[in-house]
Image 1 (cartoon, rainbow, N blue to C red):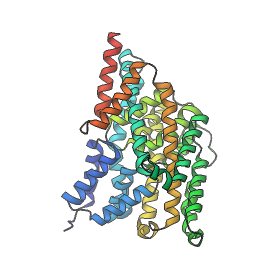
Image 2: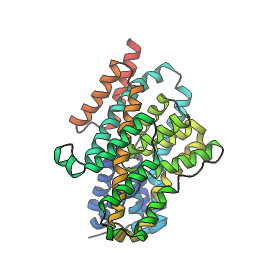
Image 3: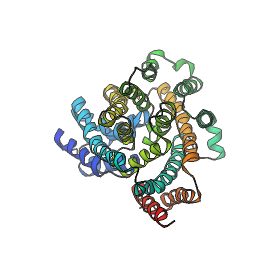
Image 4: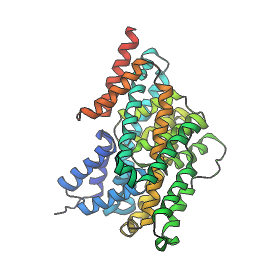
Length: 387
């Protein structure tokens, strides 16, 4: 039997989850199922499944998207807003604090030693995540999977190769592959303009000319990045790398990998790495702008689509469009891992740390990403002090 709860109750719950919720999007989603559906019985199983479907269909980090939806279920826009803020705020404050420390101490030998080990571990973690995303979103890597989903695999390879060759991500390529997949797979009689164009048009909104000044550029860049995150927060990595390192040169290669590492050791959504990046670029204002712009598409999609989601979720064109984009985005993530690794894996020790990180996460279920990061940091300290 479903139990009643107040707006304060659910906001406090998500504040706690954002403070202590380690383990990435899959773990956070499982915590919500266990706590809100099974234990507290605040949310019905049907409501939870609808929220999870929306979170997978629409852009936005999976856990944050689901949390915002669950806040919307009984308390509408106010609930979605307060739950979203409560969930993101703790990890935002943590990465902001780490950003201050990084600015102050990154030139010291011990800090450099820590990130020597951590950067290599991050490459291993991202590589494994990219593999898991590939299997989950496209298919298993076997003959049947390749035959049944050949077009998605083509998009996947196109995304990877284009990222490696150009060393940046092409947003229009993602949109084009989504449209192609929708047109190829949907039956002609089902291609209804009114059903698909409003959603597709949203993806073009962030692609506008940047205004002058760092903060406006940051706002529009991170808004664009947030609009193309599907499922795992790590899917945002290739977008961020292309923009902040290669296009705008706001961060160096090492600083970028360190930023991803910071997101790994803090609770809450992995996407909060944008707060750390924003702080390094433009202080507190940069952190606030980067985080706000990244989570805005996630928030808007929820409050706009949630009221009529049951009908929208059945629209085959939208599902196919998202499938096409997702395959290319994940391919770009793989390409980005290769590009970043070529600059961050600098010797045999870093190779070994990266491989050990992958094997540790694969074969030791109790070993989580924050554990890997802490172990790698200690290894870096030991190696740099002894050799």
